[in-house]
Length: 264
Image (tube, rainbow, N blue to C red; front, side, top):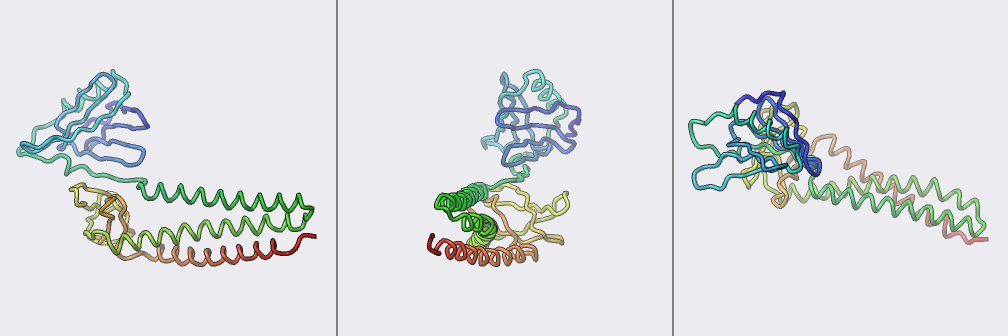
C-alpha cells in the first residue's frame, strides 16, 4: 500500500497527530511515535470528529484500534477515503500490531526523574536566596554577597552530579535485572529495532555500530532501554557526574563554613 503524501495531516486532542507517509501511517503522540506500515492497516473509518485506524489481526484475535479525537471532520473523511482506496488485501493473515514500530521520546521513569531534579534544584536555589537574604537582614552584607556565587555554583555542581549519578544507578539496575535482546539496524542512522516481551517492536539508539546491538530493557517499562555495554560518552558523563557531585559536596561544606562564622 503506497500512501499519497498529499493526504491531509490530522491534528487531534492532546497534541496527537496522524499523518500519511510513503511507507504507511505515522501516529505522533506527546510521549511516543508509532510508525504503522501500510500492510498492517485493515481499514480507517470516522465517527464524527474521531478517526480510527484498525490494524489487521489473525482469525479470532481482537484487532487493535488507534483513535484520534477532535479532528476536522472534512479532513478526516478525506484521509480515511484516501487510505482505504490505496489499501491492498494481503495474501495471508497478518498481525498488524506486530508490524508497528514504537519510538518512545520520554519514558515515564525519565519524566518522573526530571521532575524530581527540577524540584531539587529549585529547593537549592531557594535555600541560597533565603540564606543570602537572611544574612543581609542581619547586617552582614559580605556574607550575603559571598553566599550567592558559592551557593549557585554548588547548586549547579550538585544538580548535574546528582542527575548523572542517579541516572547511572538506574541504568545499572536495568542492566543487572533487565531483559537482554539483540537489536537490528533500522533505516535511520544510529537507530536499532528490538522486540520486547509484549511483541512490540521499539526503536533504540544504543551508540552502536554493526549488524546488531545487544541492549537491555526494563520489563516493567520496555521503552526504557540501554546498551548492555556503556559507550565512552556514557562512561565520561558518569565520571563527570561523580566528580561534580564531589565538588558540590565540597561547595556545600564551604557554604556551611561561611554560615558557621558567628554574626557580628
